[in-house]
Image 1 (spheres, rainbow, N blue to C red):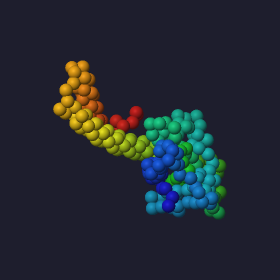
Image 2 (image 1 turned 90 degrees about the vertical axis):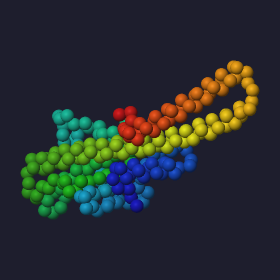
Image 3 (image 1 turned 30 degrees about the horizontal axis):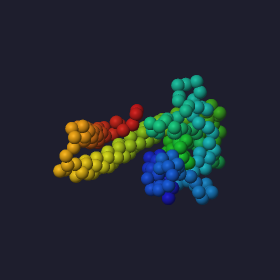
Image 4 (image 1 turned 60 degrees about the vertical axis):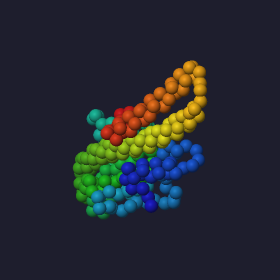
Amino acid sequence: MKPTTTRARLRLYRERAAANKYGRNDWRTHKYGNTYNYAWHSGIREDGLILTDDTNTLGEYLGDWGEFLRGRCWDATGFFIDDYCSETIRGGVVRLRSARFTLYIPCTYCTGWDGATLYFAMAERVDRGATEDEHEEARNEAARTAYNRAEHEADVAREDNAKQRAVEDIEQEREEIHEINKNVRALLAEIRGQEFTANVCAALRHRQHEYLADRRRCFKTIAERRENFWSAVSY
């Protein structure tokens, strides 16, 4: 089954990365791609979205919002999806023509994976015989909607990324606590009943204090992530 929203696609790549036993386990190496060699789209969903292989699967992609919103304070580079700042969500306008009208559909896509989202329910309709100014205004309005939808999608993706990173941090800290406890037990078992010089005893006490400090740090990190998942990322 095709992944659906931006959040679902991101979750799919992370699941693939976690299951990968060879090479890198970064989700960026498991980006979803169309392996069936034919155009695909999901049809109009109940929420008014159409999910497609790419921006040209359904209709004609006219360009990103920067093509229509020139001279204004619009971020033409898109919106970052996580704190790595390597991939962005962008968007623009898809034109879908019929005999009686033309639709200008807001569209978003991510530079990190295949697929595009068409906001069909938010499309701008221009009836046959309309002026070029009416077409231009419809394109501009669709571009503004695409910009706003891309910003919202990126906000959701960053929050989802922060939550996932917090979960991963907690799991990692728990594993480290378990490893520390195992090392402490092994150390105590070796020194129990033994006699050492003052210097060796001091070194052993120092090592034990280091283990305890590491455990405190792990518990502190776990508490921070539980209290505020945003603490797991740099933004």
